[in-house]
Amino acid sequence: MAKLVQNALQKRLKTSYTIRNERRNMITGSVVALACILILNTGVTSAMITINKLNDKSNFKTCLMMQTSTEIESPSKINVNKQANSANSVKMRELDKWREFDELRGSLDIDKLKKFFARRPYLISNRLIQVATTIKTALDEWENSEPDPSFDEDGNFNFDYVPEDDFDDVNSQLIGRGAKLCGRMSSLGPVSVKICQTLSQRADLVGDEVCNALKTLQTANVPFDDKLAIAIIKESLNWDGAIAPQHGGNDTTEKPLFAWMSDKPIAVASLGQVYKATTHEGLDVAVKVQRPDGLTLLATDTICFKLVLAALEQVRKIQKQKGFSEGLLSDILERVARDMTGELDYYREASNGRKFEQSLSFLGFVKTPIVVEKYSTDRVLVTEWVKGNHLSLLSKEDGLAMTRMAVEACTASMVLTGFVHADPHEGNLMLDKDGNVVFLDFGLMSDVSEDVMEGFASGIQGCLAEDWLTVTRAFKATGFICDPILWKPDSEEDDFVPVGWDPTTGEDLGIEKLSTELGKAMNEVEGGTSRFGALATVLNQYLSPRWKMQTPPYVLLLIRTFFNFGRHCRAR
Image (cartoon, rainbow, N blue to C red; front, side):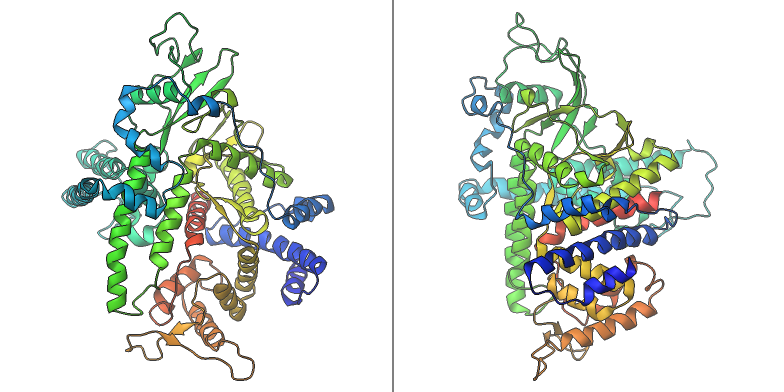
């Protein structure tokens, strides 16, 4: 395998047939490489990724056929209930307060938002005040409460602490402290929850204690009123009768929509909550209902961020070369707004789930919930109930098995299929009764282009081989460093400038110079040549003060994927 990978890196490809075969070899090595990096980095030394399926010729043929197409064929979109939704006769008064935002549904285009909020400036000012007040209150509550004694003053785990009583006053106060933090941040809506979910993986930024508190937002958020959920189901399905025997309606003569439905949600996410129900055919299903204020909060937060970033752009013009490139922050905002808007279209989510399972079918162990089209709309998604357990309820052996499969699936999607689940936190993964890994929630997905996949593959192999020149070229190819490469020749200088170009070849001289410093730093930092996470430390702490780094917008969702899987591996 190592020889195969090295050959793949060294060949120069000229014909389309050669390109496809070279890519097949490169990606095969990368699937193994990235999976091993993730697992070894997190201490799961006993975890081995099975590659027999990828080595099998028939599976290679399947993978190759996928990659020679411009896009994996997506199943036809669900069209059941679409006609009914466009001409609903059922309008629920409980939802009237958010109805004015329906004109924004489908796309949070910045120009459209500007026109919309120009007529409603009070919404922006009210939101900015609410966010500032809530964050300040959350910080005050956290700082004025007793810290968890199992963490030190810096918020890191204190392994020497031995609790005297699991139910003492300090621990009771701690529970309130963490719950208050999560409650405050969850009250700000889906954007805040998504940010907190990401921070819950970043102990290096906020400390272990905050991470420990915020991680509950992965599976438990503040639910919205059940009456509003019933109203959304009725309006979306144009149903005026009872939802279930215990959920009445105006028309009591007609059979209820479901034979049974839970009174309370069994799971709450940032943009929706899930109820368990049973159809009249006896099928157990999960009923996912979208938050009534989801679009309202997303649209308002997007325009608020736009105003803040506009101010930062003015700062950039005054202080040139200070940390970010022209237009980059706006591009990132628009990408995040677009991606999160996709979570509000459950037709798209259903199609994404089918496409994801289809794209990884060659692995043989990746499943997604089956959509029950009869009950599904753009704001209500009904799927068959998954018989299985989340990671927290699995034995160590089963948890490790699920982690292995999930890492392999995620890696294959990043460097082989290009269709990546961008939110694979613990609440969105299950191990079913047949031993398959089941992915849930396909609102946040990321498309990775062919060039970026090849850049990832090359960079991963360069890390394994400690070939820092190849890694640096991969950074440039994937947009993590500027083109041309910018640096500060003198650490006292304020401005980043181009390193220069080779007068003969025209190659950017920054590639060789940066790769030299990268290799030196990787050899000096603890665990640098054996731990993938050390690369992030080197880039952030050692190189970024001297070299101009950037985060390309397309990678934002992929970062969530890496963080989540790193956590799963460490937990096992």
